[in-house]
Image (cartoon, rainbow, N blue to C red):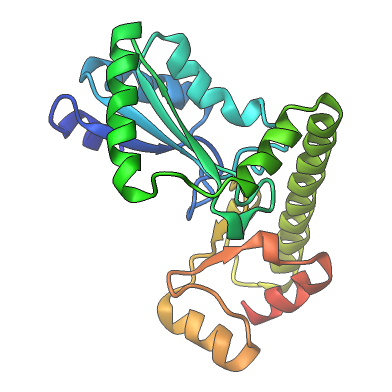
Length: 233
């Protein structure tokens, strides 16, 4: 990844997942984020953060924003696209926000005019219903606190599923395969390592539905079904 960022033409836009990477479930460590930021600064790249799962990695909205905040603290110009589809359950509303941190008020004014030029022919005035739901929750201290607690609970549930699945796989699989990656990955998704033929077998024989590259959504898995999934794998 670092080699590719270094090889990209100077001034490129580099798309990054802020947390809970989809589809791998593998996030850079804080130390690795520092190295990524170093290379992006050296090459004068523009970091463009995709923030679709804030709160789903650690359970903390603040902790999951650490990567973006670290880039901003360095004085870098940063674009961050946020989605509230997952963490506020507003999938059908397609509600989100784009934030651009600029180097000067003049740059901010020019960026804002360009964003308006893009928005005008695309949708002009977006539906306001979903945005008002978000605004009510983040603008009310009590609701915001309740949302934070629910995010922590949901992230904790996914972590419990990971532990149960890891335990079931480890006890059933006598091949010696190391399943610890299930615990090391983070967020909603996991790459299982299953190939297309194996994924087809999961569906045809066990009625387990997954993408053909072996990715599963752990948010759609209950503790009660972990053993069944382990049996299928």
